[in-house]
Image (cartoon, rainbow, N blue to C red; front, top):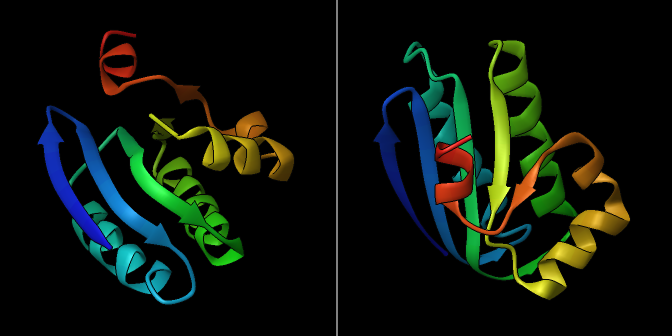
Length: 110
């Protein structure tokens, strides 16, 4: 797993590559939560275009970041999910809570 973090104005962009599972979810949580502390971000974008697999720990990671940024008055967005990941997001109900876009430019231009 690899994550690339970028600040775009008041948005935190996290480009994730690899798998989000039991072995990586805690590390991802620590990385992103560490960046969210006292930074005043209004949005978090999780770019999942490089994610090949996600399990229940990964879903928990996503929901946890959603609750965290929502609690700070912000919003979480998911972009670029591959079809297998996208299907899991839909089946789990996450897409009813979190907007999903094809790419980051659609979110930034909203």
